[in-house]
Image (cartoon, rainbow, N blue to C red; front, top):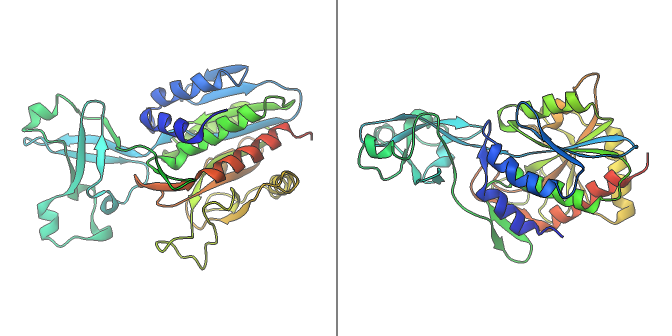
Length: 337
């Protein structure tokens, strides 16, 4: 049986930024080949895993790309200016440790910007830089060049019995859940297509092309969503809690999910004794928003992992929610329609 914590750590070590997912795809494929009949890669780099069956064509999607930074300039002193890959607030990156293939560094605020009194959302990408400890430009270029990418440094760490703090819960933990569901759904008679998508953080591009190619009857994305059970969020208007089960998405800023698929998942959850929550996300979106619009429309929803500190190197989730989510998704894949 796949181990959630260890598998997530393995994927973190292989994490890749959007548009450069080959490394993480190889690791996921090594597991998927043991669980599916065919594993292929399309033009964009989506990892498409097919478990053949005569029933309904079910597509499940979890994005394997990660947010990060791209090198756009190296000055004569060896300091690195960066371009965002995915959604960041620059002020939240300050003092964050980052890594590339052969070097680590830290994100800092320039003295000029600090002297101007810039704080919070006033801070832009021109105000920050990455210090990799290089003595000059030539030394820096031994490790980094224009277009190279940087990722959050760190690994998954256990917090108590069930909770984990890690970079890239979004959405590597969704990839873990999907692999666990495939492991549990070995006897499914449905035609199952598990897609580990690319470029979700750049606009759900991989989901759009893979959904068009697969043309599923129904689809379920797996992603993270914002927890409301901590002081940094508004608990009054967001009831989602860590450890209370996966969340069934109703709506976000890009999609109104299929009521029929959500009702089906609720019935399965009730029959299997799986706790679920309901998600209304005021901002943001997932692969669901593109899948649901594919061709003449696909009945789609999203199973969300409630997570704190999304898009930061210290995301926190509860492994019980992953276990429950995998059971729910596996039961859907086995269901007779």
